[in-house]
Amino acid sequence: QVQLVESGGGLVQPGGSLRLSCAASGSIFSISSSYTMGWYRQAPGKQRELVASFTSRGSTNYADSVKGRFTISRDNAKNTVYLQMNSLKPEDTAVYYCNTAPMTVLDWGQGTQVTVSS
Image (tube, helix red, strand yellow):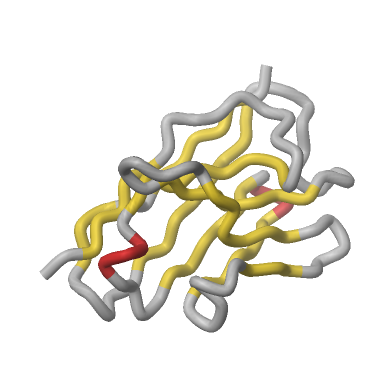
């Protein structure tokens, strides 16, 4: 069974930066497979949304709300996906998760909380 473990969240002031990591382990699942990997977030009272994705061919896509500020990347050797978040805004506050995209085929991890506040 594949386990997704997200980390790197925390409390940051507006304009700050964070780098999130998502490590996949526990199975032969490889992020270098044909799956597209994505970062999702869920803010209080809102539905989970896909904010960034990285295809197996190296293409990236971003939600308009994070375009130009967030960068998704993957390290196939470490079976890890990253999300570099710059120029953070209070509206980026949410729990961040990774999974395949746009169809989620893995069990969700516990997520990592990102709070942007002064």
